[in-house]
Amino acid sequence: MLEQAYDVQSFRNWGHQLIDLLADHLQKAQNREGTVIPYHDPENELIFWQQDFQSGQEQPLHLFSKILHHSINVHHPHYIGHQVSVPALVASLAG
Image (cartoon, rainbow, N blue to C red; front, top):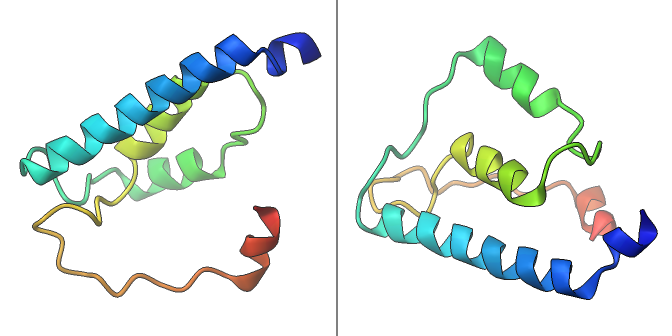
């Protein structure tokens, strides 16, 4: 399991795929595609964000894609609520 977790080629592949995923997401927003705030039923949204994303049961790209699908697109040209809240200071310790 450790060999797989620290496999350089897998890391490289996932990194490139993640950059492509994020760049495609940003490009769609800049092209005004999709919604600014993807609405999901609040009860289902709460369940989604309470999931344990560290279980390792999903491939990283699938997990990142799901997170993007559930996130507010603050980089979208139609987003006007730029009063983004300040992160909790303790969150900086996790980096």
